[in-house]
Picture 1 (cartoon, rainbow, N blue to C red):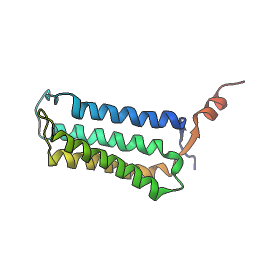
Picture 2: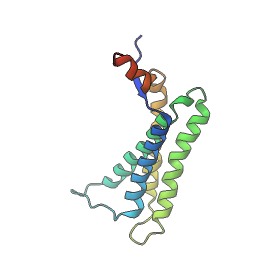
Picture 3: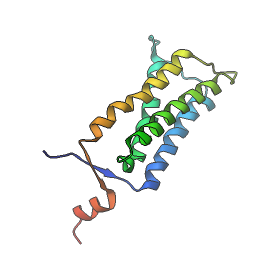
Length: 141
């Protein structure tokens, strides 16, 4: 069976991507005014929360891809970290005058973060190749 190949960027880039994703989520959650929906539909903002925290969890999963031999430690960091950030941000929103704490938002944050649990079994079927090795295999010397 041929395993799909995914490039594995250097550790510093993987963790920098986590920092960028967290910065974007925190900025739009705490520093900016809440967005107005183009068309108000039920649960429109819950979708934003869900996607944001799925992104946080997936970026953490990619950053820890070299920890595949320690699955429980990795899952604890990835799930606990993403859910922890979701809870912390929602609590901080409750302290800001133009934001509010919402149980539905908190649930969407946690469910989005938990989506990464579906990634771990899929990841067992892929092969990570260090980006430097991938480049040297593709480019002739």
